[in-house]
Every structure is written in C-alpha cells, then in structure tokens.
Image (cartoon, rainbow, N blue to C red; front, side, top):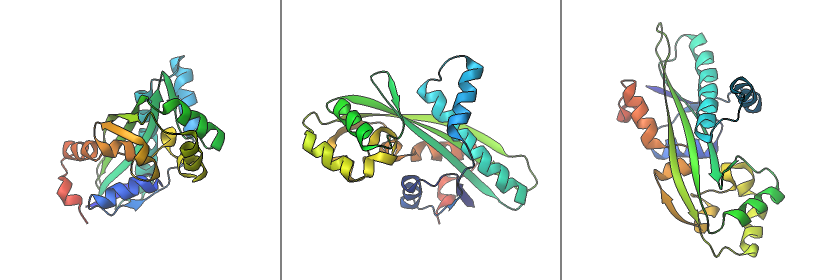
Amino acid sequence: MRVCLASTSPARLMLLRQAGIEPMTMSPEVDEDAVAAAAEKERGAELAPEELVLLLARAKAADAARRLASDGDFDGLVIGGDSMFALGGRVYGKPYTPEEATRRWQEMRGATGILHSGHSVYRLTPGAEPVEVTAVAHAAVTFADDVSDGEIAAYVASGEPLHVAGAFTVDSLGGAFITRVEGDPSTVVGMSLSTVRRLAADLGVRWTDLWS
C-alpha cells in the first residue's frame, strides 16, 4: 500500500522512515496564514492551539489528496500534519529570526509547555470517495532550568531552532536541553506515530502493511 506524506518536513519524513515506511512526499499548496485568518474571521475569535493545528493538518492533507485523487490510480494513505507549541498562554510556531529564537529560549528554560500536533489521514481508493480521519496529539515538554545564555546563543547560532515549531528539537541538538517529555515522544519530533497508526486502523489499514 502506498503512502503520501503531505509535507516537506525532514523530521516527519525521518519519523516515517524510522518506522519502516518509505513515503512519497508532496508539498501542499496551502497558504497557512490565510487559512487560519479565514477560520478566525468566521469564528470571530482566535482558534485554540489544538483547533489550529488540526485545521492546518486537514488543509494540507486535503490538498494532497485532491491532487492524487485526480490522477485516479493512487491506492493508499495520505498523511498531513501540523504542530504548534504553547507556553504560558502563548502559542509559538517557527521563530524564523535569531532574536525571536533567543527570546523564546530565555522564556522556556525551566518551564514546561505543550506541543500540539494535528493529524489528518485520508484513505484513497481508485473509484471510491476519499475517507478522512483526524486526531490531535499532545506532549508536555520540560526544559532544563540551568541552560546558560551562552548555550542559548550557541544553539541559536546553529540555525536549528529557527525553522521548527517552538524553536526546539528533541531528536537533535536541542535534545540535551530537554529534561522530560510526557506523551508520545514522536509528537515532539513532528508527528505522533502511535496516533497515525490508530488513524490508519480506523481506515481499515494495518500498520505493518505500510512497511516498505
């Protein structure tokens, strides 16, 4: 059975490969800011983190599923995801700049935040309507309270935290500054494998049948 990852995230691709799955990848043609703004305008209020990550995960998966379904011969799963980090009542996406990443790390050290990860999985079968299932996973992340300003500066200078949700990783350079993860650890990497496995089962697909 084929698998399409509706993402260009190296972390999500690595997770699937480590789990024995070699997916094709597709870059979703989704303006995330516009999708979020439209939903919040319709709501008349900001979306909660778990609502926002699910909204964006669904938009990405839907775009890839639509394009694949138009070809007519794709038989398999399409997986979309999105992640955001919440700390102290604030929601953090990617920091992009060294200044913002530094500010966040100064706030995060010694604190615990929640990583929210939205998942959308489509089952595409030639000649049948696509079927979607969704879920949101959460993981609590606690940061070391003795991370020095010098360590923060060196980590930011590495460039790693600039383009990841929350400005940290758990599976690379940032892992040494994290003291505890509560929840599925892969959630913090970018996608909860246990959640995707459960969603696949809901679609009648056995996880081991996805192994390459």
